[in-house]
Length: 83
Length: 151
Image 1: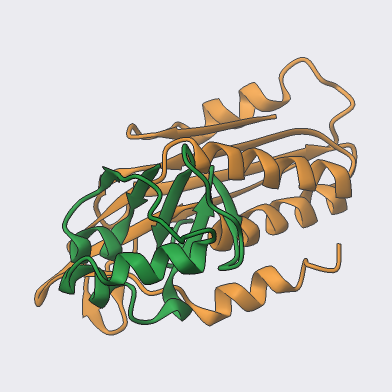
Image 2: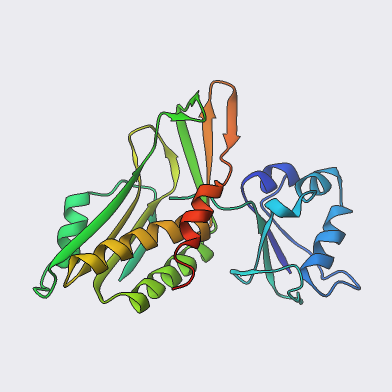
């Protein structure tokens, strides 16, 4: 799957984009975020407070219980500030 | 109906003229233009950089525009949003709506900018004397967008 990070999630995690295999046992967005937190302090810091993390799967906003599957594009980013 | 995300500036007069050209049913044209301010939260802002999520941004803007056209009888709509580094006074965003009558045009324009601010994936980073900082989302923007939820 393709993972994308924007704004301060990108700077804390240290990359804008990466490809990973769907980890064993992960079936939804919440599980994926739990797994990401274990990948390093940058991830743990960026994903510490999910009240300020939005998630999109295949470019649509979703909740933490949304399923994830191989081939998905999953984006994590802060609340938007355009306009 | 059109949405554009671009680095370059836009010409307000040219954009509005093109939006209504050839359609004489239109009796009202409204627009909103967002500009970069030189102050934020009491700090001087020297410039800001806008980033976005290519692909999802356009999809979200098109969805917002489709929703506006479902709610109001609109003849034409336009959203132009800039990305990249912008300085105080620079234009950030243009929203325009044309309709037979002014009320639909006013309401749809207000709706579009309110929803854009809370749904379209753009992020601003300001340059301040203390260094760069990411702009936090405002609860007042959420409240403004929520007024339109009942649709």
